[in-house]
Image (cartoon, rainbow, N blue to C red):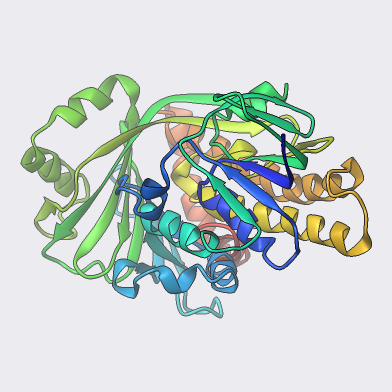
Length: 388
């Protein structure tokens, strides 16, 4: 039986962010990942571009991850607009007056994954166990599919919103199946985006256009599951023309710059984030709908909070897997995550409701946000802190 201080299941960016945050603590950490190390070192493009807040950018800088992100691969959100239906009226969020030069950055997900791996791969107290699946999990113990048993003071699940580790440990989760699919890709265009991110809540689908570097934007289309296959089957030129028309030709002629990828939309909120010698981070704890872009920002922040609790326990000579060490993380993370999760789900339900009362409320909400400066300022603060 191999012994470690901590076992992390899942080598995604939140899990590896947690591991990197422990660097220098003297803790012996094992990371179990189904993918090969070659894939971790050079992840394939998966179509997702992540909106990073200033807080996440700062964390990535402190962890050494940010220097691995090529500057020319990032987009910068200077302003954001929300449009309802086919109206030209928009709720506008500007970076001017926020104390920041921009609201956030847009970074391809595969580059974040690669950066996290680059910072973890050479750490002397970290053992990467790749091409490995978990057969069983119990308190302080993990059994791999090959029969090998690992023991640790703390097991951390970071294996996606559909976490098998969470399930094996008997931790339930609220799941919100939105019955929708998100299609993501990048498109080039002939007119400049000027650093403006736009969220268009149309009545049959939601369209987000996020500024990348140069004359390229990340395109996020959310539509009912029964319409997604037809959208994915459209020829590239027809799909691009449809997005161009739905966006009112604001960016001129639009063309595909990457393949389309589709993901089902399911929100997840674990009923507990911790148990004795066990904790959840990233999407395993909270899997957000992407409309408010809180997902990775929330997961990275939570991973750092958990790492700080563990390091404090090391410094005080207490048991790092003790429930009294883990509960402060749960309280702090839940305090932020719960309102964001419920608020995001409520927003999604309102802006996908095509009934007349909902349409009236949608229009009123946008205008209220523009005419009440404190409301808009609070939202901008949220954008620069937790999501963009």
